[in-house]
Length: 30
Image 1 (cartoon, one colour):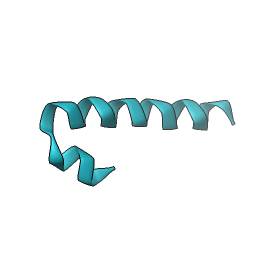
Image 2 (cartoon, rainbow, N blue to C red):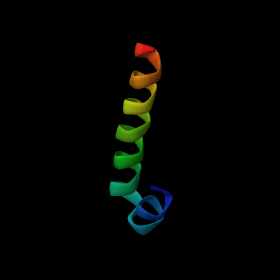
Image 3 (cartoon, rainbow, N blue to C red):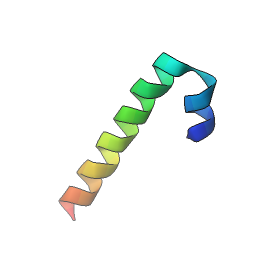
Image 4 (tube, helix red, strand yellow):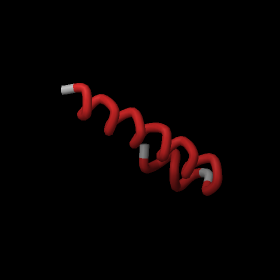
């Protein structure tokens, strides 16, 4: 994931935000 973020700035931030949102959602469902 970090490699993709460092590869492209703007797109990386959007992807990272989406991944983090998904992780937080998954943790919240537990």
